[in-house]
View 1: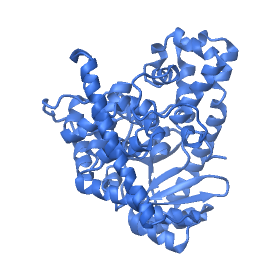
View 2: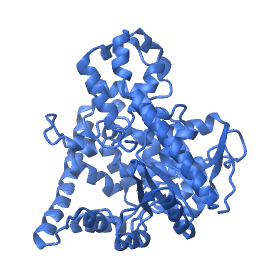
View 3: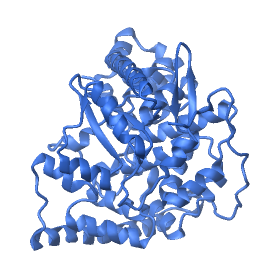
Amino acid sequence: MPSSNGSERNPLRRDTGRREPRPLLARSRFSEPEELLLSVVRRDARTGVSVDRLSRLTDHGFRSAFHSVMTGHGVIGLALTALRRCDAFGTLDRESQDHVTAPLRPFAFQAALWDAERDRLLEVLRAQSLVPVVLKGGALRMTVYSEPGERLSGDLDLLVPAHRVRDGLEALAGAGYVDHWSDYARKEHVRSGYHLSLSHRNGFEVELHWDLAPRTEGFRFDPAAFLNRSVLHHREGAPPVRVPSPEHMVLHLADQVREDSFSKLKRLLDIDRVVATAVASGHDMDWDYLARQARQGGHQAVLGLALQLSRRLLDTPVPTEAVQCLKVDPLVRTHIALLRPEAFVLTQQAFRSTVARRALHLWLQPGWGTRARWARRIIRGSTNSMAHVYSARRGVVISQSVAARTRRAWSLVKVGAYHGLLYLAAVGTVISRPSAERGSFWPARHARFRQQPRFKKGIPWISPANTTS
């Protein structure tokens, strides 16, 4: 089935009988499979991965652990493709090579099916004078990844102007897609949501967007800016496809990392590839515009953390000033750094510990008013503004009894206690390590942001889009 790619769900969430410990704090040392994954997915992996490190893949137990880590981070297609290109990979025996890269064949086939379906739907919409902006995986596979199997996705995300949503739904219905929502749920999506999900009997799923975040959350986007600044990606032998500008791609992907609780490498790798591709193609990323969009939408901490993690883990060519000009609050910077962000991501700490995940999301919220609303939503039963709709669809009732709300309020007390543990760990680090060994996660704030050249359209990767629709 096209929607079953094995990369969208984390095995740590499904394995209720897991044997590995669940530490409250992210461990500072990475396992060998995690270290190998990080070295393989970097852009310099072809020559940067040693023969000694790859020789571990001849061991069946290590291969299984490596596949588990790749799947958990949602990057198995990219990692295996990159591994196959490594110079050192050829030193392994043929049997080990085949065992390691075996999952690539079904992934490549699934990606080809999705690409064909994407082009079919875009043609159907084009016949109705609709040229949507293709978001996330659908756009990334065309613009920054060289092989379809490198970037897997479970659905196709399309952005259209709000006044054309009805036209888009009718066109998709004509293409065999249904939404399976009740009239009440559909109205709630339009009132409070930002997209509507539709599915095809063959297993394909489409999300038709008119916005990029719920209107009731503290994180906001400017969908009109996404549409107006979008660009046409030209393809040989196929109609051009409308995609977001690199700046908007990065902003949207950073928000997706937040939705993953900064516990998957997948979106950080997307950011790395978008920035690196733009730079290599001669485009000057307009970091000043990106910072303004982030500040207007409350994404300063989210974008700052995503960019800094990409810089430190993947050597993404992001200028130091691009992080500094976001002006992330010093209190937020301090508490995020206490979480050991690099280890938080690579060890998937948010999937291992609910309290760690909530501690992170607390400081990603834009301001104390938004944090208070976030805490109230936890007490009510979910931070998702559409939880009442999704729960009703599954036949689940979120209890609002005094006892249930008290238990959920107690979980916030645990977050406070967790911060006490973070402070103790920080004091222990100061005592046990010399100052020379205690590096700061964030760049120094004293440097002043230098205005970057504005984004230029019309050079090889992209060309100006026809934004009328």
